[in-house]
Image (cartoon, rainbow, N blue to C red):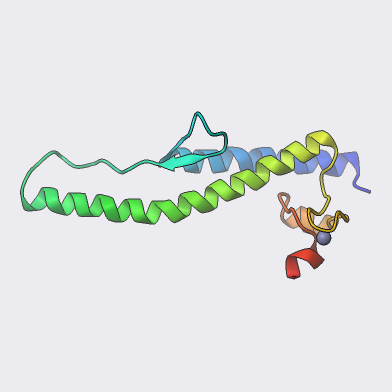
Length: 125
Ligand SMILES: [Zn+2]
């Protein structure tokens, strides 16, 4: 049984992580106002509006930058989703329950990774 103190501590960590993930995402992505929890990577626009070879090069840089941002955005978005799910479960009093086997997630595991959704056994499978 998880103590109230432990749950409060987990909530604090999760809230902090949520803020930090949102900050990271905000720096290069925009939250989709229609779809909660969905972020769209912004296309980097730092071209100076020039023409010719340098403009072409800048455009290629932008495409490359965008391509490196996409997977990062995806992984941050997934982490943020896990953190939000964990916070929801905390509110409902269902925190620390394995999604697969409905058993308890080990306290040590929750300490190491507060947004864990599976117990160690299910994770290993
Ligand atoms: Zn499990």
